[in-house]
Structure formats: structure tokens, C-alpha cells
Image (cartoon, chains in turn orange, brown, green, cyan):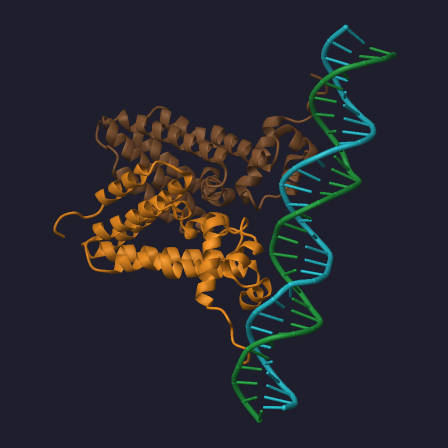
Length: 192
Length: 192
DNA sequence: TGTGTTCTTGACCAGATGGTCATAAATTTG
DNA sequence: CAAATTTATGACCATCTGGTCAAGAACACA
């Protein structure tokens, strides 16, 4: 080891993530990333590699923080219905707060980069699998059998991702609530 | 009128649409569009305007053809369950056929351009509204009241868009079928 | 045939793009 | 202090970007 880094890697990645979350991969220029991170291009390249690597790091950070927050909810205490309701409520809230148009970097990456970037695609597939498992575990606790839990999880993820699209599309916020309510109808209600 | 156009406008728009559908707005270069359309840049600009206008024309064409095909199904004969099942089956099929990764230009536009382009956002919102009405009409025929029809339609659109994201994400195809099956559970089954 | 109008062509442009690199600065180790 | 190693800096680059434009070609109309 010689000269130490002058920046907090986590903070830098967080700021890169925000740029990609806001603009997407292509529309985000190196200038944007330089401005947001506070680093200069040389340092950025030295620390991470090229633009694709920056994006991958940003996406992984998103999954490690934002998506993981959702998984933590699913793994926590409480009824499955309530946990899943919270997932959708988070979409509604971030839409209201105007957080990047209510969008989700994981969804954005799926549409913009999953096809063209193998590593991004792997990260996405792995994350979706983890999300699915967390939902399966949550509904399994309510006495749903494994096959049903798997297909229920697939369905909930679809609906969830769909609300993320609707949010960015500028659709009425009520559509997200409606989606949540119908999803909950398919979950066990009773006393278990 | 003086010198007539040497190209078929519909065919040109169709080829532009394919480029944007495949690559998205930013990643599609004018060179790509020139190559695909067979026109030269000057003609393209003369006929449509700038790149944003090309994209808007392509998106409108997508809605006028691909989305309209879905609406035609919904407005056609048959039970609502079957019609909506067909919507999801189309996603499965286009995924299998590798048609632009099973993606949907309307969804892609929602995530990539709805926020930054007012006209695109309007086109998207209008189209989603039309799609919603078509679904409402279809389920209303089955005796569902208007409020329920509206929220059911919102929910189905979410699930549908979600499968479009999952498809491009490279998620297992079974997840789309699972989503479809759970959606159908919320639709009237009986003899009406 | 001549004139006006529209369309086609491809050369051309300024600016932005992602990416590199030599040099200087800040450390650790001997 | 000196050598070695890593990081920071910003000038620099080839290439590509979306977009323009003047000149010529193809038509309608008179």
C-alpha cells in the first residue's frame, strides 16, 4: 500500500447509482458521473474500470441497499399480506416524493442493459431469484405449499415491477394502489 | 406537389420502430436509423424532424399496430378470461421467438423517455388509458361493476407490464405463465 | 419547354463522447 | 532521507454524435 484513497468508495458508488438511476446508462455521460461523484475521470477509471463497470457497481449497490431493504421486510416479522403491502406502498411513496419518477434501477437495467451486458444480466437474474425466494418464504409461513408459493411469488414480482413502469409512465397513482389491493386478494387472509 | 417521395412512409416508420424497439432511444444512433430505413439522414430529417420526432413517430406506430392488436383482442368476441390470457400468451410467445428480448416498446419508452419527453409521456399516458378502457369494457361484460372494473384493469396492466420486464430480464419463462394464471384467478369464471 | 416546388444526396460541421496517459502528489517501507 | 508504490490530476485524443445545407434530380403545372 502506498498513497491512500481520498474518497469514500461507498459514497462515490451511491452518487454514481443516483446518476444511473435518474438517467439510465446511455444518457448518463462521464461528465455527469464526474460531477456527481466529485472524482475526476482518471480516478473513476482507475478505481472501477470503464463505464460498464461503473454501471455494474452502481446496480449491485442498488440491489445491496434498496432491494435488500425490501427483502428485509419480507424476512421480518409479521403477516405476508402486510409485508407485501408495504412493498407496494413504498412504490407509492417514492412516486409521491418524486424519487426518480418512482422508478426502480433494477427494472430500468432489465429493460436497458440486461440484453446487451452479460454481467448486468446475471446480476439482475440473481437478484430476481433472491427476491422470489424471500416472497416464497413469506407466503410459505402462511401455509401455502411450495409450488403455489413459487407461482405466487412470480406473480407478485410481475405486479410489483409493473407498478414501477406505471409510476414512471406518469399513470394515475391510484393504479398502483389498485394493483396492491388485488395482489393482496390472492394472499391468505384468515388466521393462518 | 412536386417531386414525389421515393419511399413508403409506413415501411420506413416500421423499420425505425424496430431499431428503437431493439436498442432504445439513446443507444440507437442516426447511423442505425439510416441503415435500417434505407433513407439518408437528410430525407429522414426532412420527413420527420429530429431524433426525438423519429422516436415519437415510432412509438405511435407501435401503439397503432402492436398495442392496438391487443385492444382488438379485448374488444373482440369471447370471455374476458380468454382474452386476457391471450395477452399474456403473446408475451410468452414473443419471448420464445426472441423478438427484441420479449420487450415492449411502450414499457421501454415509459422507463427511458416518459420522464424527459413531454410528447412521449402524453402518448404513453393516452395509450395506457385506452388499454385500461378496453380491459374495463371486457370485464364489465362479465357483470363486474365499474369501480371494480377500473381497479381490476389497473391491476392487469401492472401484471402485464411486469411480465414484459421479467422477459427482458431473462427471468424463467414459467414466471410469465404463473403471472397469467394468478391474474385469471381474479376474473369471473362462472357462466357470467 | 420552362418554371416552381419538393425530394434526394452526401459532404460537412461543431461539439460531445468514452477513454488514455504522463506527471505530480501522498503515502509506506527500508 | 530515499526508494517504491499507489493515487490524483487534467490535458489530450480519436471517434462518433445529432444535425445542417447547398446542389442536383424528379416531378406538376402552365
